[in-house]
Amino acid sequence: MKYFEVNYLAKGQKTKTIIKSPNRRDAIAIAKVKIPGIILTVKETSIPLEEQLNELRVKLFGRIFRKKIKITSLIAAFRQLSVMTNAGISIHDSIKEVMNATVDKSLKNIFNSINDDLNSGLSLTQALMPYREEVGDVTIALVELGESTGNMAESLEKLAEILEEIEENRQKFKKALRYPITVVIAIAIAFSILMIYVVPKFKDIFSKLKAELPLPTKILLFMENLINNYGLYLLVAIIGTIILIKYLLSNNEEFKKHYDQYILKLYLIGDIILYATLSRFCLVFTELIRAGIPIADALDTAILTLENTFLKQKLSAVKISVQRGVSLTEAFRDTGLFEGMLIQMIQAGEQSGMLYKMLEKVTNYLKSRFNQIIDNIASYIEPILLGFIAGMVLLMALGIFMPMWDMAKAVKS
Image (cartoon, rainbow, N blue to C red; front, side, top):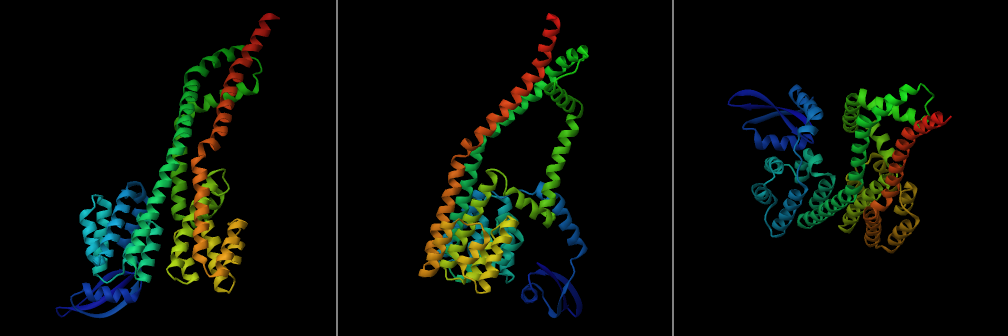
């Protein structure tokens, strides 16, 4: 959104005000509706100091104190919008009804603001843009599709289905991680108790030996010293690091780019992010192609749904290649993100003129791979957990009993 300074005459006096709008044409349209007077000039200006301070406050504290919209409330709202628009009710009246019906205060405020923007002459896509982070890029993409095709009801219905699927996958992922997280927390608590109450007693015994301690015991004593003497500082450092990473991800594009590229290389997590992102991209892209949107425009809109900057860069190259005359098949092959079988399916669809049908099959395949990982995530993590538990038990046993064995040998001799 840009800022425009509007100079106008009202009651014989020259006055000026600031209007926020995506472009000058929309700013003029908003000014004609909102300003009771004769408009003289409309020119782009810098962000007012008050707005700069407000944006800084939002960046620093907004993420911490902002109330999140419940995904279930968002799905219900778009379902209701879909039904009402399908029944022939105007989008303005539909927005008002949803605003009055929803019990989610954050969502109610957003729809109230959208209603004001619609009355000012903005499109629904433009009205949603300031709330992109709250409603998601998929929402922006599907609403834009509805406005471009004139079939808003179908787009909103598809949007509700996609959001339901995303929420279902999120719940499945949380459920799958519940067991390993519980085990890790239990191990951490047990290990901390041992370090705080048990190991210090053995430490006094070992100090009286005045002998060279084995490596496992040195590691154990080092960890005990770290937790007991610097535990609070260590906890503060961990929390501070997490906050710093979140801040850099939000405000430093270069850091986010490297982070997004690195996280794709992580065991299991990388595959989950890859298949979830690609299936969502293909789903939106398929719907756009089915609606008759040109491939380049469909790619442009589908890319908006991507959060991972590395994948966004890779798939943005597809659009550039298509605009240069390269086939969609070759452009997807050059990204290195799709398996050979999927490339062949896209090629078959492109050659037969049934691209959207093949893209549907590609989407279903990527979705099945994602579901397979989520459904079997416990079996993937269990070997790592067992290895971790075995390592901790072995370290504890060797660290304590090896010096005891040396003491027993000394007594015998």
